[in-house]
Length: 233
Length: 233
DNA sequence: CGGTGCGTTGACATTTCTCAACTGTTGTGG
DNA sequence: CCACAACAGTTGAGAAATGTCAACGCACCG
Image (cartoon, rainbow over all chains, first blue to last red; front, side):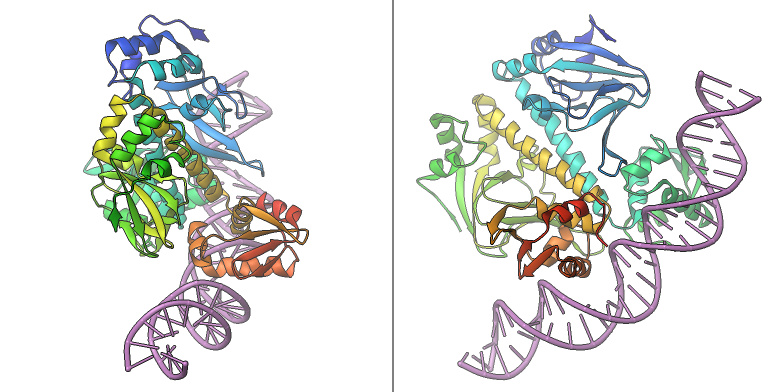
């Protein structure tokens, strides 16, 4: 599954946080990297595995999750193209705190922790890239906490939907749910049943139309009210 | 409130993430730092303020929180001595995403963002310290998410209590709640009433005894079961 | 063509919140 | 120094939200 890649440098340059690195630094990072191809549902690493690398997604998507004491899957994050992850576990020579699974066919770059740690002290340009990446993680986690502390399930869903990339379509906004509804429910800390019922209610109230994983937002203003917890019905 | 401090270097050396810095680097950090004394309930900065510094707590404690749309206080974090914060907002030249308030008389170090950013590129020893600090933040946020995704309120409270520093007392463990119960409730995303009722139930079931902000854990095993969501009653 | 699993819907149980009243403590101003 | 206001904490009763269990249709995959 692992293969040497001649144009790894170019792939790395496409990652937001490595973009700031010069040609030379990029080459060094590439020298301790490998391209990894994952099939859908393939596991990149398991919770508890010793961590000797960090990763960046080039295409596809990964789900980072752990299994809770009561057996349910707890989604920590979806990693989309351009984002790197496991830097912390890697830099601290720890173990993975969660399991990473490909959601579809996925290309990731595996950067050797050993080589990268050397780079970090030798090449002063690398640290800012890492700091930038960690900052972005912090930001997304704070957003996540923000979302989870929103106590009404409807408000959580509305906020989630509204921050999804949307495109115009027949004068209404349309968004595509990036993951299965079951997975989305887990991410929002609600049950699939509740998710289904919320969408059904919004449909009844004329806020949205649904067509599989595509939502047409008919009344964005009302959805924003729901997101702000001013409830709808 | 701000005062120059001759032994700032020594104070900085007491911070976990600056401990790894050499004498010289520490001196440079100290050169762009100031000691700030806060009285209880004094505000260090407000949400939305332009951020031109980051901070580290020497003694006392700060509450970092924002006000939600529906007017409630949403506690993002308690910063205890030894921890630094606002690095991200500072390094990215942004605005503070939340308000920081002293919970009691508190000493903090204010590190000028401008000076520190210069240090970051000039002194290769500084970056690892920042990375370490950010990593710790990431870790605590992931723990927080873990806690929030625990859906039963009882389990959340039990997990919170069990990870508090405890000390032996008459053969039972005793923990001190570090914040007012009202604040704790907000942090656990429950209402003060629910918190009160949970403690009352545990008291009835003989799991704990309470005396103001001190909890004596009479049956830690049972509490662990509650934390794992195997419920008690 | 049969199985497996997602999504939906219904009925019901349970948790948690809301509102309200009351107590005890703290802090402040007269 | 006291009286009073403000607020944290507790408890009760009822309402609302969400979870649980169960059944069913439907699509996708072998």
